[in-house]
Amino acid sequence: MLNHITIMGRLTRDPELRRTGSGIAVASFTVAVDRDFGGRDGGEKETDFIDCVAWRQTGEFVSKYFTKGRMIVVSGRLQIRSWTDKDGNKRRTAEVVADNCYFGDSKRDEGGSSYGGNAYGGNSFGGNSYGGYNAPAPSYGGYNAPAAAPASDFAMLEDDDAQLPF
Image 1 (cartoon, helix red, strand yellow):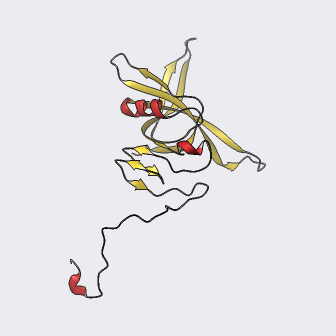
Image 2: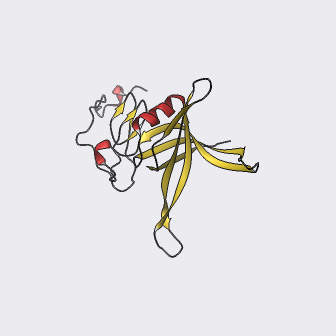
Image 3: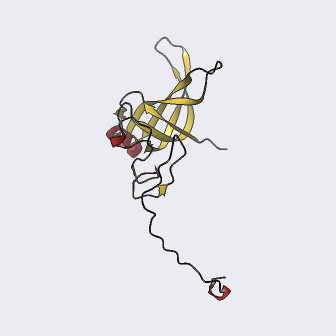
């Protein structure tokens, strides 16, 4: 079975970092995600507000580097949780349990539509990556190609088949 979700949107408030009784960090935050289409009458796009939770180092990372309004990419799984409210009613809620969180914009972008950010130890969308692979930028609202092509470890082979390794 497969349960994987990736969302991209803006934080509606600063992440809230708490600790369990045993000291495990857990961050809670809400992401506002615009739908790809407008309403039935072709009007404004609707927005979904998706609750997310990040545990341990991921939660500490989100709490330290993300603030209200920042673009975030969350990759994880969808979880349905049952609970009882203060009036004794049984309730259910859906939330994304984050495995990885990435910057969806750059700090210097200040709310624009550039998707070149940094990620510590993971993929980033078109920006710098500390200790990870630089993924190509997605086609969300425009892509600016890198200024210089990365150095290549490959060499051109002559047309002679004798040089082929197989």
